[in-house]
Image (cartoon, rainbow over all chains, first blue to last red; front, side, top):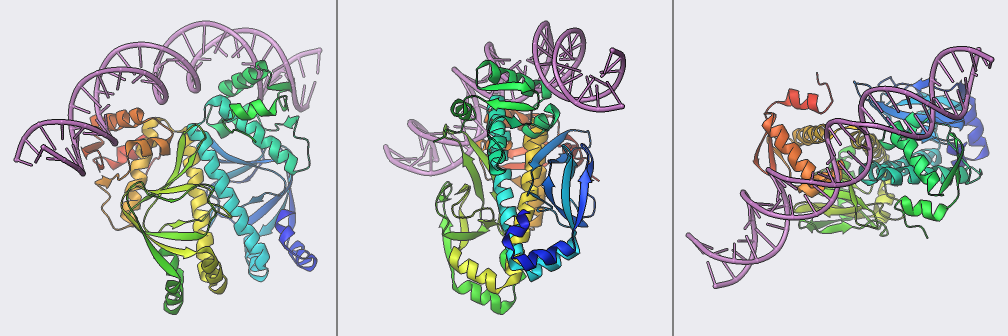
Amino acid sequence: MAVCSALQDDEVNELERSMSFVRLEPNDALVEEGEPRRRVYTLTSGMLRLSLALPDGRRQITGFLMPGDYLGLADDETYAQTAEAVMPSGLCSFSVRDMDRLTERFPRLRDRLHLMTRTALRQARETQMILGRLAPSEKVASFLLSLSARAVAHSRPASPVQLPMTRTDIADYLGLTIETVSRTFTKLKTQGLIRLPDPHSVEILDKERLATVAGITIN
Amino acid sequence: MAVCSALQDDEVNELERSMSFVRLEPNDALVEEGEPRRRVYTLTSGMLRLSLALPDGRRQITGFLMPGDYLGLADDETYAQTAEAVMPSGLCSFSVRDMDRLTERFPRLRDRLHLMTRTALRQARETQMILGRLAPSEKVASFLLSLSARAVAHSRPASPVQLPMTRTDIADYLGLTIETVSRTFTKLKTQGLIRLPDPHSVEILDKERLATVAGITIN
DNA sequence: CGTATAATTGAGGCGAGTCAAATGCCGTGG
DNA sequence: CCACGGCATTTGACTCGCCTCAATTATACG
């Protein structure tokens, strides 16, 4: 578990004593925006989506959590966003009180969480660029490359990329409609940059050109 | 200075000893994206814009800093974004080394910085919603209300709101073009929601309806 | 195998972007 | 003080691409 990588063995043992497990089925909500924050979590398997909602139902997905990611970095008294399972997922959970006590006793754990928060902030700002300034093809291309890179970080193949989330999720993440997402996939396929064996797998055929489309000049 | 509000008087004295001052004229760059991060800053007067740039020149402004805001929350080895002055500005500056030493000695300072980072992360995610899911009028309306609220937090009037940044800055912050920003101001003026005594002042005539346009049902 | 849901594809409209021109503002220098 | 020039802002005309609405096809699940 990633938060533990900053700890020594005996410290990990201590941490594990106040820990409990959660399993989620697809679309199960773990926490809801506005709810009092009583527990924090680390994802051990599966995938979660984090989202904000407007009164009229519009939704923005702010990110997808993958194993090792921590839930609750940004939150204070209440959860700032909703977290739901994209696929069957497992999590470790701690009470906020226990976690506060642990971070106080283990500075390395506290530093690790601060580091993760800063990384999340940089990612959020990269996402602002994607949402505000990239064209649909660029958005989708950079999304695929980002998922591929994260898969590699989890010792999974860079291609084919698994897309456990729906087109609606992708659209709500990239600020597009599902139709535009779908058409963009088709376009990338037609251009020979990707293959779509099925709607939840994307094989990257030409990473270089895909990176060019993403607006990120690689190498 | 806001980072100091967590400290006692003798601690503030200590902090002040390793401090230096910077003055910036409009459009002066303080730090550039990618540059090694040697110093951190707190803004004491004026306004800064934080931005990311693409190779082709497109730009996304990720936020505007106002007095009391800290520069360097998200950054690690290098600055993750460019910071430039929007108007004449003054800053206090510390070497990263000094600051690290100080946060180690004064836990309240470290906690305060962590808290500010988490707040910035929540704001960045709110901004993702604005960029991805709001219509132009909603973007501009929420931008005006946000500036107004921040002005109040600095003991300045809620209206008229001062807009020291250019239309280009606003467009690059909201993911629009300058023409659309300008037309949206004109539309809000025509609807009687705001007045534009000059391009850098906005008088809010009907906060309620402006909030409705922003998609945020207030009260 | 049948049904519900998700994804794709198609047709058409509208609104934000693009290109271009006019106006307004401000600092500079005559 | 006024004239000029550069820049920011506003406004106009038009295009194009994304969204909307609708229908079809594919997929997943019981």
